[in-house]
Image 1 (tube, rainbow, N blue to C red):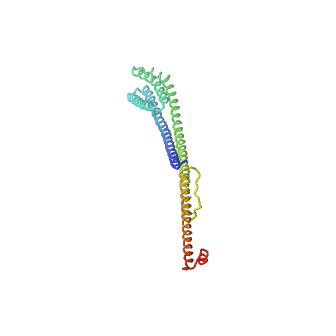
Image 2: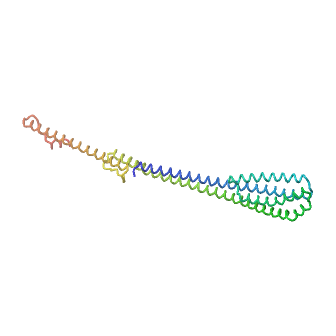
Image 3: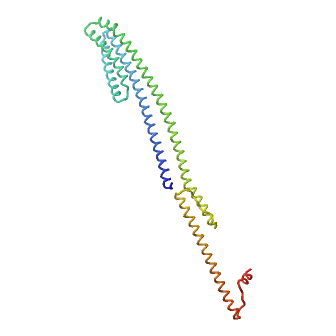
Length: 298
């Protein structure tokens, strides 16, 4: 694999890992957001059920007091409580439509209120028609048992919303803890892979550069017999081959120069010997051959 491909592969792999880690953190964030939203919805529904339980019970007591006392203040309280309950139901319905509350709880509480309200409206009509004894009998026969059943069902729904809130809190803790662990694991994995990629690039670039530096030091000391070899067919192996060829060419050129120099010296010596022989024949100078010159040099 060429050096360029190694670099592209390493950076591509690292970017892919970073993108994967970012995507994983984003998904974890969505999970946390969903868990917090579920917890928020559970708490809102819990408080809504508590408020509805309070207002419905208040309406029940107001109806009973109005039948017994025929006090207009109690009747006014009934109307005010009904308006408040209607407003609360409207808010709860908006939450259910927006997905911020469970429609099952809304339907259950609404059904309880409607069942008792039908009897309560009939009682109020009896009182308005001056049929107080009929209203009292209806209260004892149907309204009170229905109100007791309604309170029991409201208590069950209230307990369910409390359990839902506890479960949502536990879910939030599990999601947050799991996200923390997975996030730390992803960061640790990214660090490990980053170190591996850095070592891979270091071994691909820096180690060959160190070998080349040691080789050049040997060449600078005159040791021309040292060869530079890298396995493979990448840029470094090509560079090593070029360096070896360059050194071989230098050695060859130096050898040729030495050979030419020796040939010139030998030719010059032969010419000098011939010249001295001529002088010797002419009697102008002593003959000094190669052997004698060598003995003089020694």
